[in-house]
Image 1: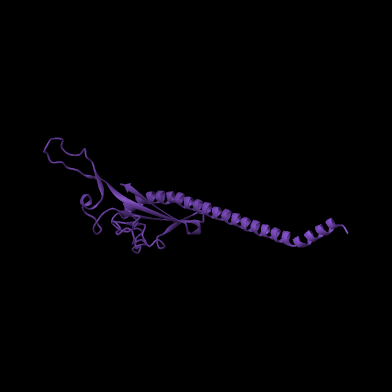
Image 2 (image 1 turned 180 degrees about the vertical axis):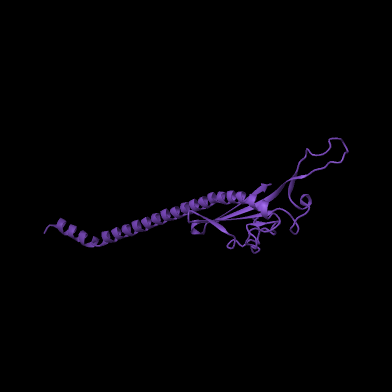
Length: 197
């Protein structure tokens, strides 16, 4: 017998199965790495999708601001000192003749029941709701607008003489508009605007 041949067959006998274990460990490691990469990609897709939905609901708030601005003409002409629409429950109106207090940390009135406020549906996915409140204190009807409301006065009105009585008038009364949009995946955006009329 050739001793070299015996030596090589003995070495081959001792290594049987070791390469299989190494190959299995490599397959398991590659599987774990693939699953981790797939999970990271899925998480990135969810985050970017949520950001896109949030931006879309923020864009839809423009519709609420424009709709409330168009409604202001009707409200001022028909029900300036009454909640609108007529007969709406407190917390469910589109317009309030007096300021709605208190507000939360975001400045949104806490008495608003957003699910009861009438909504406009945009693209069958976005529910747009708005609430306008006249920035006036006291019970309606407000009789002294200059004293009870947030207004701007005309600084050019009155006498220019030193020490003379200066008369001012309330040129604009301010209204706070709060728009809330609920979109896909319960994405919510809130926007506030001030109107002077």
